[in-house]
Image (cartoon, rainbow, N blue to C red; front, side, top):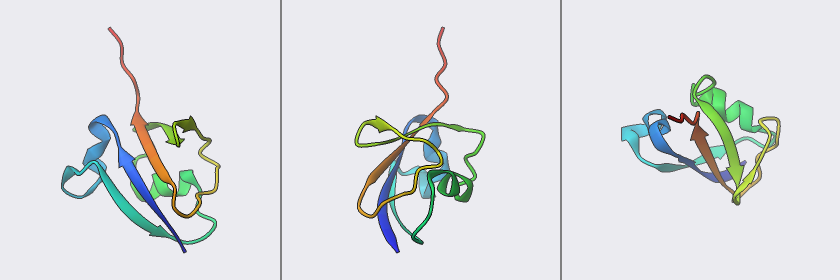
Length: 77
């Protein structure tokens, strides 16, 4: 099992219990970013994923102890 912290930025907080900003997950080894996005039902809303301020691919395997951040689509005006 891997343990990691997930932070949802902006309006993505609606995907976490009671709209909190971050939660800790325990996930099976071999879980990808995409797997977690699907588990959160955020496929259509999560645009960017990063670990340690570095963008990562959805196909990346999650590792124990990391802090994963998700960001929504950005809109400009």
